[in-house]
Image (cartoon, rainbow, N blue to C red; front, side):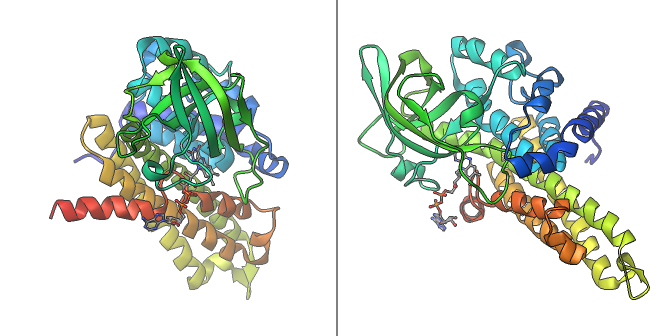
Length: 383
Ligand SMILES: Cc1cc2nc3c(=O)[nH]c(=O)nc-3n(C[C@H](O)[C@H](O)[C@H](O)COP(=O)(O)OP(=O)(O)OC[C@H]3O[C@@H](n4cnc5c(N)ncnc54)[C@H](O)[C@@H]3O)c2cc1C
């Protein structure tokens, strides 16, 4: 057993960390306050390979291993939750279904473009006003074949990156009979007539990561825009989410690490009763718990990524890592505010923003409850 990153992974971690420290972390407050996406840093991510974490090198991707991909998202999350979510969604949701399932023509057409940093990003629309956790039963957006094209009608909700995307991979019903073989993924370029991206949602946090409702009115795209197999969209979605869960776990780790670092700094300078608060045992215990939980979460996230890289089953481990790391993220950010006292409640200090950002992670890409269901099913099956 080896708990060390290899030389290549360590160099990658340092490169990404230095980039995030210079280009992303200093802008995190502004991005949140003004609800603007950090395009300036994103443009520079292309050449670094950060927009092609799920893409093979032959299609312009970075071709990094799954642990390195998790490290990249962890580091970006350390710098800024909003930028981290947008880039995690682009890689994990917006490009990986294409890399995994699309035809060579679709891969060549879209992947080098969105990995380059010179174009917009990728997005995936699964959720609808009436369907989130229960996609199989709930998806109403439908696609029908007509005149050599798919005609799509319906409405999606909570689509990360929709307004900053070249295309939206859309989960649609293609078989009205229902059941597990009734959904498909179709790539819809965002400039297609009939597609409307509604104004960005006003959210609690992650304000620099645009999230939108999207509607489709007689949206026509070529039949070739089908991603993967017709009526296998649910299975493709579940496999995509397995990978996405490692990514959201990694993002939560980065947020937790950043909150802990802020709490450590503050606890050494703030004085009460004649000494720095870091010398009070109650504060030390919160710091110790945070450091311990972050360590455990990091091991879980890296293990799930390592299994993925080895081509071994990792669905349960990814769900466990996501469940644990996202709840750690929230707890660590909560206690970081506690350590800051009243100042922690102010927007002047980063822990307030990190807490709001961390809150989403237990909801997106499978809620904690859904992840517990995934884990329970596999634990029960294997006993
Ligand atoms: C900021 C943000 C970004 C997002 N980005 C995207 C995106 O890019 N693409 C996309 O498709 N979606 C995206 N989403 C949507 C997100 O994935 C869903 O919100 C999430 O999957 C939950 O679905 P829901 O909101 O419909 O909740 P519901 O499914 O209605 O669940 C409501 C509550 O019931 C619980 N619940 C549901 N079923 C069960 C059950 N069987 N047993 C026990 N409890 C249950 C849930 O855990 C939750 O607590 C985003 C959401 C947000 C807020």
